[in-house]
Amino acid sequence: MFHIKDEIIKDLEVNPWLRLRNRFIRLILSPYKLLKSILMITGALVWLGTALIAFATFTLLESLPHFDQLGMEGAKKDAVQRIEVRLSDVENPKPFSWTKLEKVNRELLYAIVMSEDGEFFTHQGIDYDALINAIGENIKRREWSFGASTISQQTIKNIYFSNNKTLYRKLKEVIATNRLERNLTKNEILELYLNLVEFGPDIYGIDAAAHYYFNASAAQLNAAQGAFLAILMPSPRKYHFTIFQNKHLAKRHRKKYRRILQDLRYKEYISPKQYQTYIKWSFFK
Image (cartoon, rainbow, N blue to C red; front, side, top):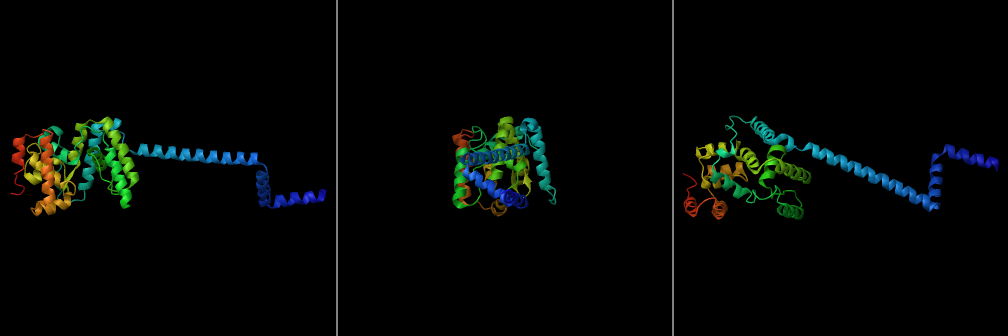
């Protein structure tokens, strides 16, 4: 018997798989030990998963702008740098200069706000109902096109993100927008937005647009001219050609123009008399 046991021990030392098999058999024959091992492995996996999620969350949050530290001046600096990068490869770029909000005509300002985000002054940066509906539509169509972006979200995207349409990018945009809204005023956000928007091929900012399309400053434009600029904004390069250069305003664009003016009249940003004047405004002279 002694020699047989020695042979078994020798086999176990030579073949580690035998040791592993015997250990597994003992675990099966001992429910308590099996349960203990399963709980230990599960606990380790849960701990590892939690650690990975915490690390990923920390990395995500640290990668986004900290507006409590940047403030308006830091955000403005980042915005100007973004415009300069966009114009760096352009031959004979249109002049760009920063325009303070108080230098923008009130009618022009409200025309763009009514067109792009009518609830801008009342929401907290995100229209969650519209966002959820947009995600639902994306799932139905099996594509990530999103939409439903507020002015605050557009401001964040224009400064810090690319046009990549992914769920991860949208998540970062939402978090960064919340930070923006907590640390900057609505007027500061609006000033950033109006200086970042593209109104045509390499035409950035409200003042550049005013000079290019109307040979005037942003302080001199009225609601009708603001509504016209708002029509160009969804696709500025395309509409610069199809609308401005071809001097043609399609029926759907005329309808949008009237809706913007109606919203301005309803909110009392323009008077009924002004509405009647602007509704007859000649787009192309």
